[in-house]
Image 1 (cartoon, rainbow, N blue to C red):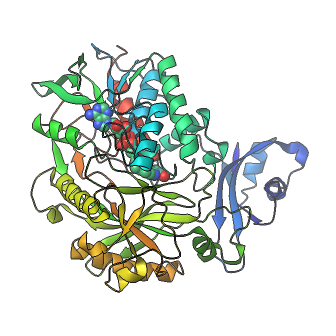
Image 2: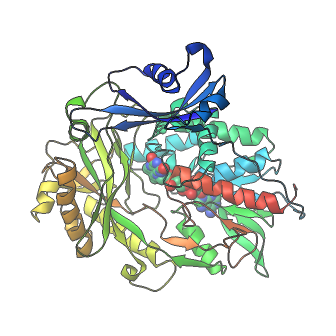
Image 3: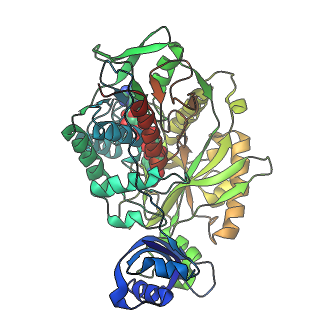
Length: 531
Ligand code: FAD
């Protein structure tokens, strides 16, 4: 198989043009081409007045060796990207392994364990997706939060009600396995080659259910409404867990994939002496603009071209204080969603459906915060810092889960908003116009102000007066790292616990959490024999 990169077509040429161009590039007849498959497609909008698609293509041809000898530019043998299963180890495993949490990290570790015959038992505190949808609808429509099953907790984890962006900055071949498993479970095939693949919450809900069914068909168990309340640890070794209903399950091996919002579980782990440290994260607001403004800024005269879809952005700024400010989890054509998991505390986030066809674009607009900002030298001080912000946001919004909001124009002029304008906020429970300076320490508001002006130079209109900012975006990543040994992937303090995914501080996003779940399962598999 040959890999050809840098095949360029203009935006108005059909994708079939790729075949013509690759034949030309290889100087071969159509009869010499056995098959071809797009490996990667990206959009190049860097040059004024033109937009191109750039393809990397895998090609099967007759006379491959002969073609390679011609040393054609951008033509090379295709690398072998096939995922290689780990070899099972030999140490005995007395009980079936546990996977705590069924977000991307837990789901993919459980899937691999099941595929390799380890019959994992998955414990998930939230509901299965079919029921979780109803709990979330109750919250979004009536303000009735279910603390056990919500946007953060339940089947599929935090990303189920998301834009389902599947980009990851982690360069790891396991990423390909993750995408292939998603496709097997019902995701569109284009996620395998688009430079910025995304699924959308509507499709994700079916995908996570299909992965669950696959794990069960392979001999695994997936238990919902099953919160792990405590850990049985003797002589620094895991012996089992205790569920909230009192049931004990014995096992010396557990992948701990609890996400960044399991604050009660962090506290329990801390009480049991599991090694953890506070880590930096970021907080801020969610900002909404008309999607048409973003399309125009990114694609100019090509905005609304049928081959382009809703435009994205990713922006970074270094504030004069030295803090990084960046946009996070941008959702083109999406909605700002109520994402709280604790009563009396308000959290925002964003999601989109596959079509990305809502009127507004939204994105987190976040400022880095560090353990020195948390006011206490304690591993869980970041959790307290988040909680205080979320409580203030709840109060400012009117204590009914309406989100406090401010127009960018008012924010830049240091005055409270009293109404919204051209941009209709999409947050389902409604917003309360206010002054977000009451929510944040000064170093956050001043950093956001600077960044807004900087971002306006990159995306024309980013600081438009009627853009809406809602708060608080406090769950961008974990405030804690549950430290693990770099080789065994087990907790530094507690043998048998494999901290994994975003909550343990080893991932940020769906794909990187899934990759980390695979890594932990691989370590467990390659050490122990099947139970
Ligand atoms: P989680 O997904 O948080 O899963 C942890 C699971 O553990 C949860 O289901 C929880 O219920 C369970 N759990 C916790 N404690 C216990 C316990 N004690 N017992 C049993 N179960 C427990 N990322 C992207 O890459 N692209 C996006 O488009 C995107 N959009 C997002 C939109 C929203 C609204 C949110 C909230 C997040 C979004 N993210 C996105 C981030 C992404 O969802 C997370 O990075 C990812 O889900 C982390 O995976 P994880 O498995 O480590 O943890």
